[in-house]
Length: 605
Ligand SMILES: Nc1ncnc2c1ncn2[C@@H]1O[C@H](COP(=O)(O)OP(=O)(O)OP(=O)(O)O)[C@@H](O)[C@H]1O
Image (cartoon, rainbow, N blue to C red):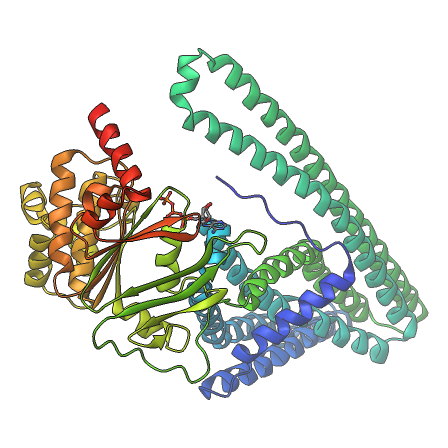
C-alpha cells in the first residue's frame, strides 16, 4: 500500500526552520574532521565545481571567437583560427562535463557516509525508545520515516550541492561577464527575466503542490479500497458483493483520474509560462545585441555569444520548479526523521549506572505503584518477596496488572512509585543492558523472525553452535518435532512465525530463552487455550527451564501454577492473597473461588 505523504509546511518560516534544522543535523556528517578524507573531499569537490563553472562560462567566449574569426576571414578562405577556436570550444564543453562528473565522484563517498550514519543513528535511536513510544507507532510507519528521511537528505544534498548552488554560481558569473563585456542593460534584462521566472515558478509550484497532494490522497484512497476489498476476499464472496466492490473502487479511481488530469494541465501551464518568460528575456537581450551589431559596437560573434549564454542558463532553470517542489517535500520528510531523533527515550540509563550483579536472583517488589496514564493507576502498592531460586506465580482476573509487573521488571517502563530490586539493586540504578542480560522472558505470544527455526533458536546466544541449539530444543521439547519436518532446523517459520502453531512457536521461544541461560526467568503464560497434550508438553518444558533459576510466572490458567513455591493473587492492582496452592485452597478465599470457576470451565470444555 502506498502511504499518504505528509503535508508540506504551509509557510516559508516553517520551511526556513526545517531547512536550518536539516543543515544543523547534516552538516556534522559532511563537514567532519574525522576521518580526515571527508573534509578533503568536500574541499576538492567544491574546487572542481568552481572550475567546471568557470570553464562553462568561458565556453561561449570561444564560440564568439570562432564566429568572429569566420566573419572576418570570409567563408571562402581557410579559417585556421576559427577551426582552432571551434576545437577549443568542443574541448571546453567536454571539460565542463568531465569536471561535473569528477565532482560527483569525489563527493559521492562523503554523501554515502552521511546517509549510512544517519540511517544507523535513527535505527539505534528507535531501538532505544521506550515501549510506550513503540506501542503507539506502527513499525511500518517508522521504517518509512527512516527511508524517506534518508532519501530526503540524499536529495537535498544532491540538489543543493550539485544543482541549486552551481546554478546560482553560474548565474552570477554570467551576470558579471555580461556586465563587463556588454553593458548594464543586458544585465538588467537578464536579472529581470530571472526574477520573473523564479517568482512565476515558485508561485505556480506552490499551487501545484496542493494539486499533487490531492492527487496523492486520491491515490491512497483508491489503493486502500482495493487492498481492503482484497483482504476481505471471503466476505465479499459471502455477500456476492463483487459489483459493489468494483463500483466503490471505480469511484476512487475516478477521483484519482480527475486529480491527475488537473496536475497534468497545471504542468503544461507551468512549462508554457516558463518558456514564455525565458524566450521574452532571450529575445530582449538578442534585440539589444542586434542593435549593437548594426551600430557597429558589437560583432556577430557577440550576438551568438549572448544567445549561447541565455541558452546555457535556461537549461538548469527549467528544473527549478521540480527541484523546489522536491526540496520542500524533502524538508518535510527530514523533519519527521529529525523529530524522531529528538524524541527522548523515557527509560534511560542513569549517568554512571552500574552493572547488575545477580548472586542469588532474589526479587523484591516494594510498594510498587504504576500507571500507564496518569488518571488510571494500574498497580496500587504491590509488595512481593521472591527468594533466589524460588518459583512465584502471579494470578488474578484479566486486567488486574499481572503482565504489567513483568514489564516493570524488565524495565520497559519505570515505576511511578515504590521500587523493584534484584539482589538488593534497584533496577533503575543499573544499566538496561545488564538487566536485560539477566532476565529471560517467554512472552504470552512469541513472535519469531522471518527466518529458519535454527536462526530463531540460536538468537538466544550470539554464536550458538548446532549442538547448543539442539540441546536447547530438546530441553524445550521441540527437537523431535523439528526433526520430523522435511527441512528440519532449516524450516522457514514465515512472517512473525505464522507457519508454526501457537504451541510450537512458544516452545521455540522457550528454547531460545534456555540458550540465553539467564538467572531469572519471566514466563508470561499463553492465554490462548492450548490442547491438553500441548499444554502438558509446554508445562514440562517450562518446569525444566525453571530449574536452578528464580522464576516469575504470570499465569492465566491456574492448572499450571499448583507447584509454585508461592502464589500471589492480584485483584485490580492490589494483592488479595498470598500463599501456596494448598494453603490458598484451604482459605476458601479469592484463589479458591477462581479455582472453582476454572474447574467448572474445564468440565464444560
Ligand atoms: N500501554 C498501555 N496503556 C494503557 N493501559 C494499558 C497499557 N497496557 C495495559 N494497560 C491496561 O493495564 C491494565 C493491566 O494490564 P495487564 O496487561 O497487566 O493485565 P493482565 O493482568 O496481565 O491481564 P491479562 O490476564 O488479560 O493478560 C489493563 O486494564 C490494561 O488495559
